[in-house]
Amino acid sequence: MVIETKKLIATIKKLYPVQQFFKNRYFPDGKVYYSEKALIETKKKGRVAAPFVIPLVGGIPIEKDGYRAHEVDAPYIAPKLPITASDLEKKAFGEDPQSGRSPADRENEVEAEYIDDLRKSILRRHEQMCTELIMTGKIRMKHFSTAEDAAKDIKYTEKLLRFYEGEFGNIYRFPKEFASMTAKEKIQELYKMSSELRKRQVRATDLVMTSDVSMLFMTDPEFLDFYDKSKVDIGKIKPEELPDGVVYNGGININGVVLSMFTYDDEYEDMDGEVKEMLPKGTIALLHPGIGETVYAQVTFVKDGNFRSYAEKIIPRLVADEKNNMVEVQAFSRPVMFPYDWDSWLVGNIYDTVSGQSDSDSGAETYQLSRTSDSDNADGRKTAEEVEAMRTKAEVVAYAESIGLTGLDDSMKLDELKNAVLDYQEADLMGTE
Image 1 (cartoon, rainbow, N blue to C red):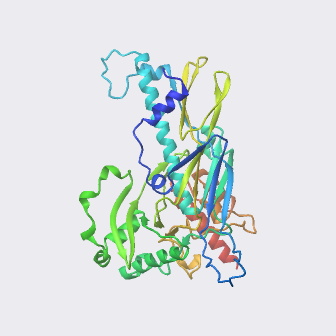
Image 2: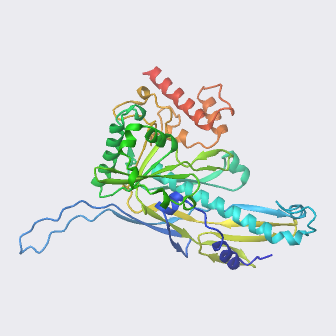
Image 3: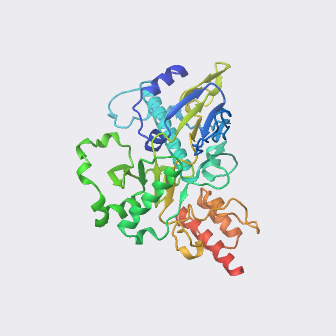
């Protein structure tokens, strides 16, 4: 059994890399800090034109661009898996029942398998943090003490990394229902989004969509007339280089704005057992590679009676518990994802409330972006943002019953439960006006 953390770190670096589309493309790895805190630096691109001055003045000072540097307490990600004697007494997956192998023979293989499983679970959380940042401009992190608390979504300490001032300004609202738009109107909306970013001194190169949005484009014959098939060399698109859940749709040129189109439908299973989408259905995002980066803080734990610190992206660890006759395989990571410029992307949702309409008139089916508020309701009810932040069915059902909405149960999907609560609150509010 290999128990030296440095050797385990060296080993995990040699494991087959996991493709992470969002993290690797938009928030690639940066520095690892020998500290419990990580330094993040953001800056808004300035638009100030230099002044004309008379020669004797020598110069006129102008306002500095919006630069911010913060040291933040890095979040703590630490999954673990136990290995018991009974686990090693069973034959491994694919092992010949007549192999005659002993538990000791299987130990290293099981440890390596568990370390890889934990590594992949950490990387999935990294990916989820990056997509949440793009969708909301912030990363909401709940730190739990036990797996039971995590499954029930209770007894947690919450941290929030927020990368905007006032309201989140990167949401784009479409002027009418997207599905009813002509191909020309859809393309014009993409151009408007790109133009808005150019006003912010940002050049978007990627159009990232969920599959339902992609199908609206790719099944529209008029749109395909704009789709430059002649310049999409399928022979140069290597499927093995694209991570699971991502499809490259080729490129499109809209009046000189060249966009690479990606369909992204990755999912993850959260600690509450719910399978969730990395991006909500209906998402359209205009991005560019290297929007920001991911930095890491060190991890400190007791080793051989002394505290040891390790500054790495992922730190594996093995802890033997002779009293309980088991070995725990652990893995740690303390990532901080951040954008260089907090105004450098746009994200919209085709099911969102269209511009110029109220929520009550929109008929929208999903409300991830349209029903948000940073302030509490006067009657003490949760805001739409707080409802959307709920992560378990039990939490939503309990809240629904507390406001007088009955009839909801676990047979419904989590999004359906949330939408039922939001519709109930909205209908109740309209009835009191």
